[in-house]
Image 1: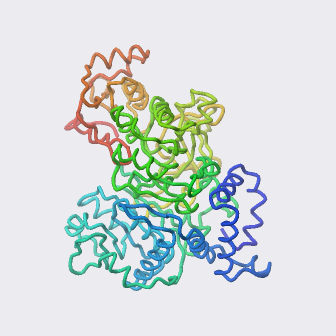
Image 2: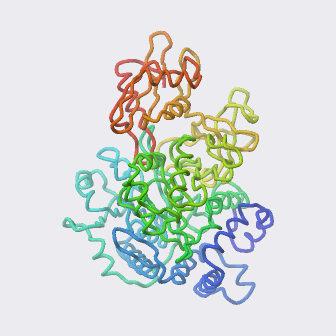
Image 3: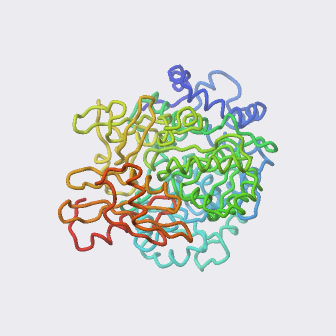
Length: 614
């Protein structure tokens, strides 16, 4: 991709400056920092980097030399502002800087060098962010390990990335100790919590014995999540190159021209603008206050904490999601920005009225929902609930994306307020390039025509899976000379560029040669008030091969009959072959914590001993 010096970057600016995303993103930074703070941050950054004087110096500096000084300058300017509120502890930006420096120096003292990996296995906590910043400053990717994994899956996830250091919560010691012989790359274990076995370091002791001076910096964006793993072992997705290339000389260059890379960079981070970055201002601290109820290891949750990372926001991680605690925290901490998955909203709305009505939620501005399908009814009910509790505008925002693509489409309140039918969409393509492809004809689909969803984004142009044998070629389609990422999703786009998802190719039911999409049936069944959750899966049939089956979780304390489901679908004029041939009621459906249904577990019961496709 060539030179990344300021002079070369400046030559790319004219082509980018006219984009709404560019203007909105810069306005977001200015709004959130404030004019005086913006000046202070820039002056401090220039002073630390030695580039305050001549135009020649300005033209010759490199962004990767500026980035760590910019980050530290922002912490210093925001000084006494609250950075993190975690487990009853409150950390200012001054506190954060001190703890990050101490951890970074401690990791370097343990022998960690640039590009060595430092993995984390932590509950939502301040330590996660301290580790993230420390690893970024010293150039070490930080794999986000899923603490729900056990045994072989956890050993494989660690083995793929071969970290030299593992920072873990003491609650995970038993599962890690059982695997120690199978994860030989780890040279040092750092334990958060009280119980620290011999040969491992206690996190707080490590910090207290370390220097609070600026560490030797080799900046790299430490973002290193895994895929969800709904169809196999989670794969480690390389963000430290794709997201971090502009800011680090350690990152590999994506295989696109610099100007195109910068366009994708601006498109991706413009989600902060689309989600309300120019409008949100806490009446006391004048910043974004972000509640983080979902697991920090999940890639989708990054959208919930980027304002804390880049905009001087205040992050409030929850140890675990509890519906009433979620509402109480919004009220107590004046939360105005949160990322959730649909199951969280469903659990909120299922609370008794006397609990839901207790809390004043008027501070909320942006409820971001993704990771799994949300029905139009859920979106409307969420807005109605927050309005009843004090919000003066609709708050529900949705995006479509994946671990590989990051944010692509965005659904804003103004979109569905203008045309209510857009509630059924996942928004307009605003943060990437996403199109619908007809594989039969080898052409792009016109509006309304169903096809494969393909994407080019900041994260796909430099995509690779760290330590995985999978060949990336199978995940891309070449169209018009460009490589587009194929996420296995199907859908269509309307004439205004709004995307409607039909379902996932691997989950499609082919009954007697007819394609049936589970999403459509699930959305219809969920319209029944008695239904809390539903999974539509493939069920074996002698003549047709497979037919749809519905496994339904009723709302607590309610019972429902099979005939009620069938009559409901008939009233909605659902075509006969789409109506489930088998219906089962269960107390709980298996979902990942990120909201994705574990359909394979359900299907496997029905297909045991029977040969099936796919």
